Length: 340
Ligand code: TYM
Image (cartoon, rainbow, N blue to C red; front, side, top):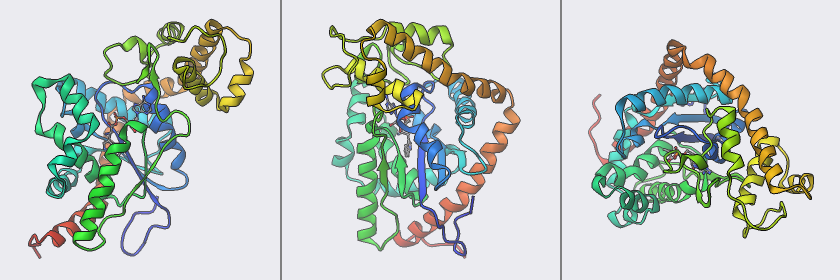
């Protein structure tokens, strides 16, 4: 991949995204974001981060965070993110993220940050730990994106509000000073921008959901996956049809359509007249088959810590070079003295 520098202005647009290692990766992350991240690698300059600094905005066990950071990198590689094509790194290894976040905090209003739905939900869920980091989560996320002058950000629907705030901040900074940041656009899956919990198909499937029986983790074994799909909540109708009034079945249709690479219409046709019970089995089996090669690759990689560290180090060095350019520009514009 071409490095972005003054002599070699990038021909391709820049894509940026990140996942935070709070809880294990689940099918919603994969379908909503990761699958697109993999696809975009051939066409764009992609930069993908494990957002460990975002993880500490909620209570967490240090040993788990460390283990998951390796896990996420092994899974990044197992799903097909390629360190030869894309820059893959860990957020805390590139200090410019925290540095730019501080500046952006000073260009974000208290009222704007207070309106973030995720902040309201998380603080309501954990009233004993409403820390400043949780409040400033979206400005760190804005810093992640803006540091790399990203044009496109593949994310699930739940991150749309945060992306809009990043756009607002970029626009404001560009207006107060002079054009500094690219104002990024989101990329959302047509279907699957929001995958729902199998046991509660009106709420998002999440890594840290209380009811893990409704969450399919990428590293779940075949029996666990089948058990979760067999228990999936549907409705009292019999039609396998995508319809807003049938959230359970629609969610299963979306999942099947993604893992079988078929359109929603083709899936509806394929399962015409089939019972819900049989459909659930088929979706479970398709997911098991889909995840098999990913899990095999993950198992190969996870014990090779040296290689994972090498990917992290190499990615951080490349990311840092790009991040530094943006940060120096920002520091200059806000009036910080630069040492010669
Ligand atoms: P995180 O780790 O919660 O989620 C990672 C990605 O997965 C998407 N996602 C879903 N998509 C569809 N259905 C679901 N049930 C589902 N659950 C999660 C999320 O939308 C996200 O795209 N704040 C981010 C991490 C982040 C980031 C960034 C993302 C930090 N800095 C800069 C983009 C750009 C987050 O919470 O991800």
